[in-house]
Amino acid sequence: QLQLVESGGGLVQPGGSLTLSCTASGFRLSTRHIGWFRQAPGKEREGVSYISTSGVITHYADSVKGRFTISRDNTKRTVYLQMNNLRPDDSAVYYCAATPRFGGSAWAVQSDYDYWGQGTQVTVSS
Image 1 (cartoon, rainbow, N blue to C red):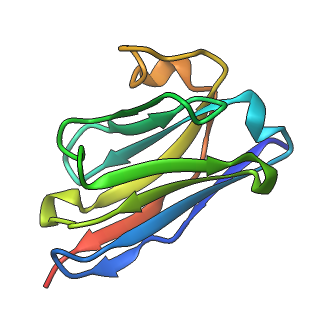
Image 2 (tube, rainbow, N blue to C red; image 1 turned 90 degrees about the vertical axis):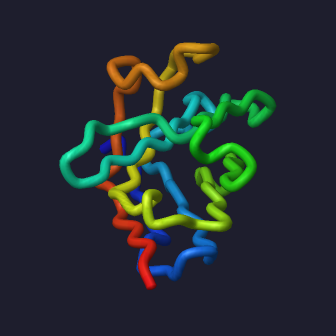
Image 3 (tube, one colour; image 1 turned 45 degrees about the vertical axis):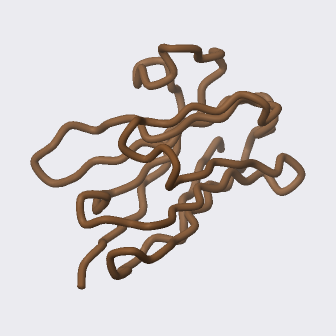
C-alpha cells in the first residue's frame, strides 16, 4: 500500500523551530517529487515548498522563503521541512504529497499530486 506519513508537528512559540518529516512506504520515494502544503482553518490549502526527486530543485512560497528549508534523504525514504522563525500565521495542518510530474512554476498545482499524507498539526502560539 502506497502511503505518506507526516510527523513532527506540535505546539511551538513564535520564533521557534520545528522539523517536519514525510516518510514514504510502498513505493520508491526517489521516483517522486514531493510537495509540502498547509491548510489553516477557514482557508484554502496552499503550497509551501517543493523538492525534486534528486533534491537539486526546490521551490518555496514567498511567505516562507528564508525561514523554511526542504530536504530529502531517499535512502531513508524521507523528506524534511525545517521551519525556523515560526509565526502565528504558520499555524496549519501540514501535508506532504507526491507527484511524478516535474514542477517548475506550477509546482503548487495540487491536482498534479497523486498521493497525500494525513497531515500533521503545527500550532504557533505563545
